[in-house]
Length: 336
Ligand code: AHM
Ligand code: MG
Image (cartoon, rainbow, N blue to C red; front, side, top):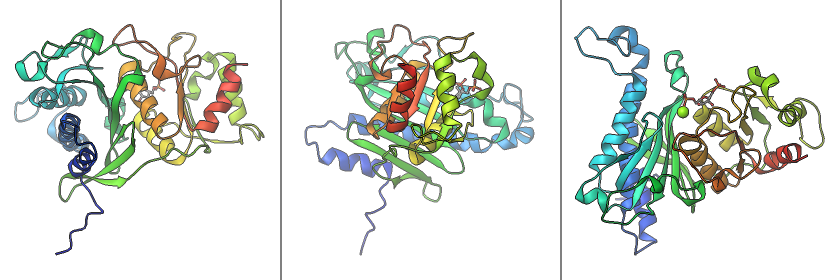
């Protein structure tokens, strides 16, 4: 019998990667499998979101008398649950939680990884049927194995990430993750309920035609950012403009598109919020890692995102990420 080995599931793929590292323990594969499982569960609920009028509104009691949990809380609990019950994660931090959660038990205290995630990014878009996503990032602990993880494990710079990824719940559901060895994308094959390798070795095109930014904030951006945006809008031999503007307001969808097609995504600081809106640990570091592995760049306007030393779990940062040549061009404006 000929078995088609061209189409690998997420589990098969991570196990195949393991074969190339005979000393690997398989902990990272098992962590990714846990994340894939939580993503499948969240996907089922996200797909039901259109039925909310039938099933009952979030945060209320449905007609069966059950409380309907907000989807972002549901997603948070799913990811936290699988990681707690798994054997590869010593603790988590989530955009939905004020503080870290340490899984203080014998198995978890011997796990070498911690995980951070934004369980449902762009959740304001759920009720209008726009793609939303989960973003995650994985670090090796710096605290002593055998003891509970500590806050220091979570306040590491992004350049220490072992892996990072996202799930996009869209017209199809995809899980994309990066390790230092490459970025690979898996599409959920609903017929077998498995993520299957559909986008091997993703490379971000060095240049593209798309810029993504919230234009409503234009007059609140600093002058240099405004000049760059103006440059994107006209025929210009440096920028290669004019570009097309695309902004969904759901970062996972915006950056996913730009990763595949080439482009630049920006969430700059504004007069009211100098650090912008996006969170360094849950949103910017994972995307900066993925895009860099794929050949692109990411900065806060002054410094490479991955080199920023975090001081707080929920700190925000201006964020510019995308195709290498476009980012270089942006930096000539920001450094002028
Ligand atoms: P969230 O974590 O509360 O969902 O906010 C993050 C989202 C991003 O997905 C998106 O890029 C951004 O907020 C859009 O914000 P804005 O509406 O200010 O442009
Ligand atoms: Mg978010």
